Amino acid sequence: MYVNIWSDIRCPFCYIGKHKFEKALEQFEHKDKVKIMWHSFELDPKIKTDPKKSDLDYLAESKGASKEQVQQMLDGAVKMGEEIGLTLNFDKGTVANSFNAHRLIQLAKANDLADEAEEALFEAHFKEGKNIDDKNALREIGVSIGLKEADLDRMLFTDEYADKVEQDKKDAARIGVNGVPFFVFNKKYAVSGAQPEDAFLEVLEKSWAEYEEENQPLIVNKGQSCDADGNCD
Image: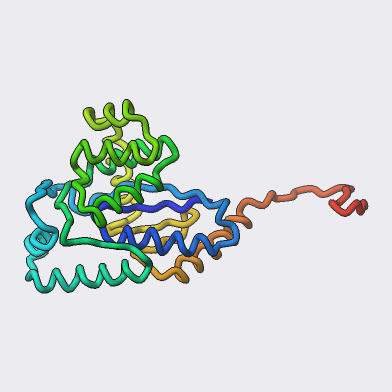
């Protein structure tokens, strides 16, 4: 069963939502049969990378809010992160466009390392305050999760995987995604936002029950047969 997730590295609730979903998945009986598919979503495609500008200043400008209001919002995210063991250092955050980070995720996805890429990028951005639009930083992150340097350099210095990022964005628009994180279970049930573990687990169980039913063979004719216990009719 597939769970498709649209996310942006710049979104603290995507980081939190990822971990809440993972905690729910750990409790799910059929977790080994769930395939996670990560998809790119840019909250602000036009953002200009500016390592000298703080997240607080950027958000206050972009939202037209006071620094006090933005700080209150960030404090709420920090508290949510702490409750599940995550560190969000907004005071160290680097304002950066996430497009190249998404291209790195697409490369990782092609090598079955998308989950590792997501986690490493989230940690780099929110915990370590790294510039996720810096090519050297992205190369370092890619190597750390097992990607080949040659593949990373080809991606970083060309427009490779840009089309994959754009396609994910188009798919998001097609199904009405206008905020992240956004989870789609078994191509049917959607969960928006960093929901509690119980909410994720409930949707996992409901989706799995329907997935199993949908994948049961339809018997159109039944003749004589024997069962697994050796009983024949």
